[in-house]
Length: 415
Image 1 (tube, helix red, strand yellow):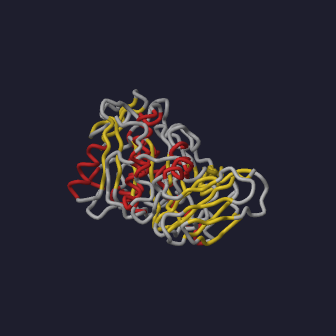
Image 2 (cartoon, helix red, strand yellow; image 1 turned 180 degrees about the vertical axis):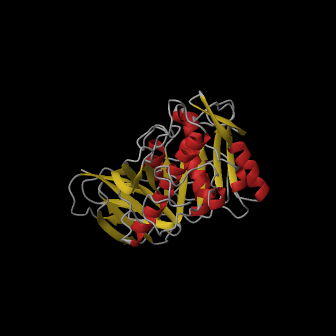
Image 3 (cartoon, helix red, strand yellow; image 1 turned 90 degrees about the horizontal axis):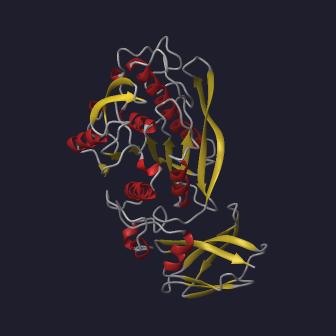
């Protein structure tokens, strides 16, 4: 188990260890803003009723970047329950957006034929997974379609990641590896079963747009068969408790709600072994002695999950070396600023304030209000710069200073 906080993170602020991103995507630099109940698609549910599919989008408050990585996260609940507002996904969305990512939590079609009576079988379970996976792929396509229509969420479509918890982990793995129609189990009825048509992609929304992703993150989920994984497939990060009694840690039969044996699946241990065999980039964090989804109920395991997820993502986003281990922790934007090689004073201030830069290199300054509106943009020439208060009312404002390859964020308070 890892420490909840490490001062090492402070020592790495703005250092070469942060690749090309500076502290962005490594540290908490923003607050988080959520936009709720955005419809991304529609399809028939298990009972044949039309269901609107919705998601929540979490963005960095006050951020002016318009080309940001996107992490879509699917909740758990055995394909029977759960929500985009669940405790298994919301903290991850909030914290990733605080680091500068755009994060989205999705609702998807739930329900399984013959549950609870007379009891679902392997076909019922597989159909539920495929319905949810169709929705997962539709959510990726939705964001690509939105990009073509003005990019309202400010994303980089080459940096879309899919993550999922438990049942959502199944979905993330299917997004990454369920890509061949021949892999459809022969016993799945895609003609008479509700909402299953459309082949691999499904018909849940934004047809015609691609659903490929940069990498997938599996938190305590599994895949039907690791043979679906092929050399050259997308990278994967796995988390799993080695005492998981809900979703097999290795390869075993999954038993729904402890009562209905369904089918053989391959858990994270088997996925990681297959990835190693094929040369697929991967990380595997074993929660030793833990059961199912320990990040939900244990702050230390949550910290570990967020930390390693951050380390995995910045390998692709910032060209950092791949680091599968717990490393430098994240700081709040105020803490990050207090450790950065610049200083801002006085803070709070009534009028002007001074920014002392590192060396004589010029820097750019952006100040935004809490709604993200830019109130001041300026170029600074160091090492000491006096900045006049813009024409704004009293209160807190976000401040970002970019100097060379380094970027620092915090708050300035005008009294």
